[in-house]
Image (cartoon, rainbow, N blue to C red; front, side, top):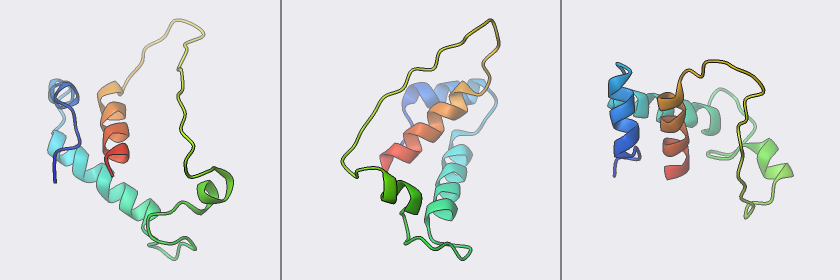
Length: 89
């Protein structure tokens, strides 16, 4: 399997003191648990039943995150890793 994390995300995770390999594994395990039909879930493996029932499978979208005031954003390298791993499947 090709590493789903970009070099920029790997570098940012390491700079934050996080092990990219572990983060990647953790996200993959979490996705498998949430979408894998484990734990008595009614959904088929790999399918979120709510999303499947309400969103066209060919739909795509974008989002803008806009701060409404001064603040501190934490966890950006981890967020990038989650999005990259989740979209690599």
